[in-house]
Image (cartoon, rainbow, N blue to C red; front, top):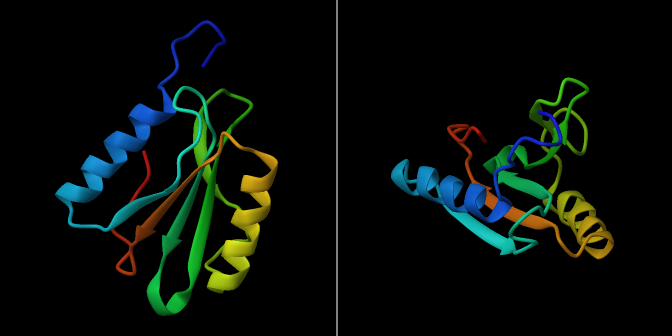
Length: 110
């Protein structure tokens, strides 16, 4: 994606994900609203007994957007995930935090 290509507004992306989750009966809650135009997003995905998976969106060298685990390769205890999210929201007031209850692993962002 080049700098002159139109970008998908974050608020619109969040609304789309809410609709996708609603149709699939996957609980989805906006824990913190960020900048509607260009705010970054953290996904807090509750994997049930396995713990919480925190995903952050990144843009690769090729301009493609992808999701990467923010706290290692797998789920972590809820307290660890929530402490990380609190630190990130303190640094970035435009950050969105989305909570998805998905122990079955059905939710796929984007």
